[in-house]
Image (cartoon, rainbow, N blue to C red):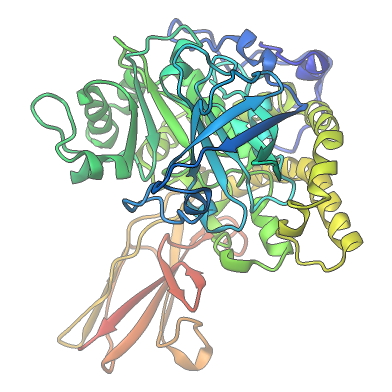
Length: 559
């Protein structure tokens, strides 16, 4: 067990009352589910001792370059995928990086994806020198987290990750940024994952390191390699997995092929390419923190040089800790009902990914995950540890977010200074409750069937053929399906043209005359024990007028 913060020394082993379905409270913790293995990853604890909870002041002075880009150009860089990538020279100094007397010693550019559309931007600072580094790092990644009311979700996550064995974390730091003397408010620096990340942990700098962008652990043509193990089309490859380190990538494709091939022995494949303790730690902690946006992104894969293993490294957790509920409480905004899918909470969230699905289908693995969630909850993500961190952040964060420039940009629906401050305080205080809810939901939702995909119905010679992939019940209960077709995506009673319940096959063929036009298919899977409670929708999605209708498949009849 690693204890990297002195005030967590007692909290890390505190046993708190656990939820139904987990091991019971006792004075002695049960034997750990994490059995030591020679392939276990070691993330050096000393590296996180400088992960201070104080706010570090950073000052930048822009350097005028006639005919070059300006700070305004940097702030107008709203599309991360186009060729417009303005970068400017700046002079960097901070509380722990004194003035070196140079005109400029770093570059500044904007960073992030959806956050670029927010009024407050996030920035990357890259030092010119490869020798004089800031705390052993050449890049500062200053994240504004504009959609997070609390502005602490990401740091809270990584400070807690750094106490969990088998799971590499990232060093973080609160920063108050000033550019040309203007206060830009509170940011969170998150360690860059690249060459320095490996070297600072005494890991081989030539190891493979990938950032998931749209990666589901199955092969797509964009991942094609040439004869030298290099991407055939690097731009397309990096739309799936961004290559941070590594000279050739054949081992990656071998791992993907093994995971995807349903005919092989999955236990053998998993043990060859993954470390069980790392995988269980990542998935268990992610479930507890409630970062549902980790299906195909927001994680790194680390493949040590000379090894077949791929290790999960977490990334970007400002969508965790009940962010979906924050969105609902504040009126939704551009997110609207994006998070409303029934399958999004619990293990069903990851069911479409072959790695996770096949792991959970293996006998005994679900029980191990339940135990891993309970152990990490009690030892590392317990209420005492979380509250200690939140209490340490608050006197640093609250003065900055309660004044310009941050206060006016917090995504709070309330109007008036006191009402907005109260909303921030409520959200801040709610974080710890969300972990409790996530643990409860994880256990409760295991009883629901898993989501699946529907196929577009076909009408031929007056016969409508409907088919879908089979759902899966983790307890082995029998499953039946309710099939509904309507001419409206809202499925009002007057628009329903087919309503067939209790179907036990994964297809339906019946005579049905449908006039040409648009139709909508909805399939509900129910288990046999508690069909009214334990039911699930398909993965299908229909979007209209900026609203999401989950479990609905649109199809057309005729032209």
